[in-house]
Length: 311
Image 1 (spheres, rainbow, N blue to C red):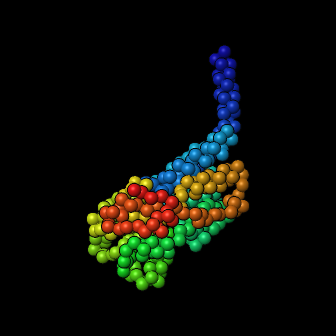
Image 2 (tube, rainbow, N blue to C red):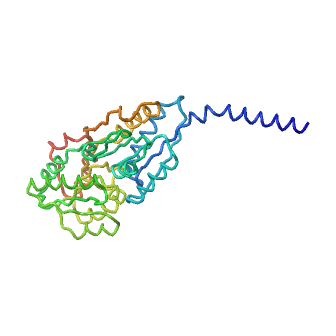
Image 3 (cartoon, rainbow, N blue to C red):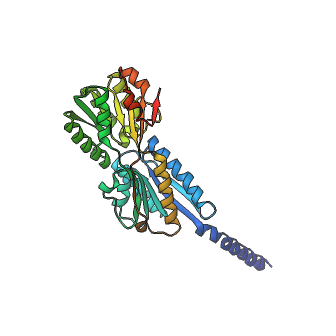
């Protein structure tokens, strides 16, 4: 009798496991690498999750494994290796350093990137790789500065551990020199490097899309406001830390397109058959509150170019 009951229990257990099998097979896991707590990438990720849920609802069960490494080469590599070890079905990365860390691991797991500056210049190729990025007309920032004040020396905040930040530095340096400005490099690799903002005499500062710089944006802006140095940025100043003007591609569009690409891959399409895309539309924000702090008056011709004016 006991033997019969044992056999019945085993059969019931097997039936239960078989009933769950379709659900287990339908479960998809997406690994995401979002550097630190950079608000720009956070907004991108929120848009990604919302759009993915809209597209996949009812078809697949999705688990998202989110990695938030500190902006550091070792941390980026460790985050990539963890997701590969988890054997996720897809990896999504925000920003160039996280993307390059995954590519360096030479994994066969499909990769979708977003938030990359000029991805066509960053060698983001491979049959398992696709995604979207952006291009910003950096020359416009120099033009705006020249309309607002005399700029003999332009400070450029960058990070030599971030490939895309250094490309932005090189481009802005060339543009500044074309306008007879001296370009002053302010390399941020650690918090101690913020002291360079105090020692280097500049008339204005441009902040590249460095993860490190934006992790410490509030500290950077506190120093620059105290030194009365106006600032431009290519990431939006969500926290209104005091940036005078920002020229940036909307993060929501990139997150939504990344979700569309991810959904196609999860439903069977190969990344090599999904064309990468570069966004060129930008939003321009002028902060008149900060302008008054610096004694700057925006000409009406500039104000009408703005997408948003903070008063």
